Length: 265
Image (cartoon, rainbow, N blue to C red; front, side):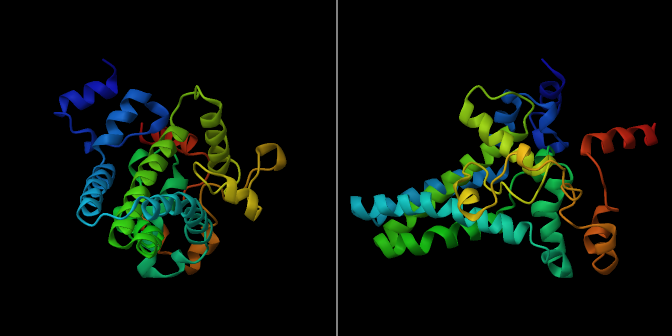
């Protein structure tokens, strides 16, 4: 039994009573953590509820299939646009009432990309997004049943996205080339240049919208890859994220962690 598993056992299986970092975990530990996280449990319960609604208000096969297909097509585009223009947009932290949300849903993740607790999306932001992206088109195609089918598809796609996202930060070499490709593009987004590779599992829209890149295409690393452009200069005018974060950290998160440990010892 390794240290992480020992902690889980000693705490009565309560995995989320302490912080966890994906670069220190193995795949088994990740899978256990994944299915214990409240967001994944919520997505799966809502999927079951959506299936129940579909059974009660069934749609015909064609509208149902089109509703699910629409969710599969629309979801990657919606995620790309939100990732590029909302999460990486230089505007949320400029409003005090939105600064805490931006800090939680993306700034913290880029400050330390391997911190598991802040990797999962918050339900109060993900569920409305999934609903807006799937319910209207599903209802237009197949009424209540079509909406339920599209919403269920969106929820399951989100579960897939979250798991792949975790794997991309896990300290292991993927066995399959298609997973290794996604992992490399995403790690470039986090550790080389944040201005590109906005897709998580699908880089089709990055190619279409001109934001796809490979590290060899961009020689220099972005100086704002870990703070998303929220620098000390910016914080002079918009201090709220800095105040909530206890300052603005710079440099690689693991090196920062080593420096903090030296200071505290």
